[in-house]
Length: 356
Image 1 (tube, rainbow, N blue to C red):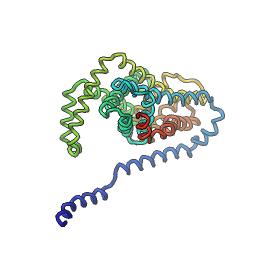
Image 2 (tube, rainbow, N blue to C red):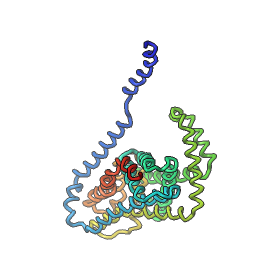
Image 3 (cartoon, one colour):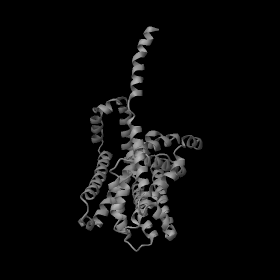
Image 4 (cartoon, one colour):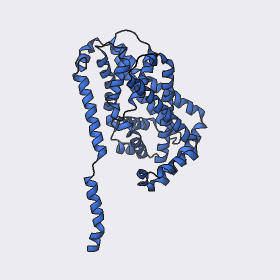
């Protein structure tokens, strides 16, 4: 008995140490939520904020508000279409309604986690509950992310080329630098994904290098599984690139998805009925907003999204309407999406039952 007790003592000490360790993830999440709520509160109580927005509702052109909301739903629908196409390629019996539920759940967890890091792991988990092999689910979502990332990098480059005059304007050094950095990061991610998609040797060398890092060494037992996933990913890539129709179709859908998302500010502008503006120019400016806000780790890019929208779109709206427009854009593009997707954040058992 004493011997057993001594053997258990180190485990008890370890358990006690774990209890005393600071849960930084939980702290970051709480701080992020508080910052998000603080920014929302500021926009609600500040001059020309929520009260001004409520006071102008009766003057809105309702059709444009409906179109703005429809664009957001279009973004979600097209995202579900992409999940469906990539998953169905290796799982012919997969149904669109399963893809839609996975899409909505993924959007919810992306919206509430830093750098949208919680979306894909939850989607993989839910797809496994739908009896999709985790390796196939991971491969499908990585391929979708690859298409999306290269698509948004191309879209951003197109926006910069079409709006070169914008960078000749006296932008604040901070905003100019953040826009340039945002594009550079998107381009770097796209190039990196291209390299690991086509160069197996490079991918395995990167995995070997990562295996030497202290953080990864703690999970050394998982490295063989990662290698297996990478092999499956490369095989899946070869299959997709042998199907140019599927590849072209996914890029067209991604372009339409981004366009739907980037059209929301234009619809809001037209809802205020304060003049005319170039659709193309506003699409490009929303691409700039995305470049800047993607750099910040807070859930939903809280603070960065509102500030960048205010900076880029203040030339379109009047001083009396820009804050209200910013708030309305945020409600439609973030809080409404949270509200719509929230019911699908706890659907593991339902999905399994439906699949059965």
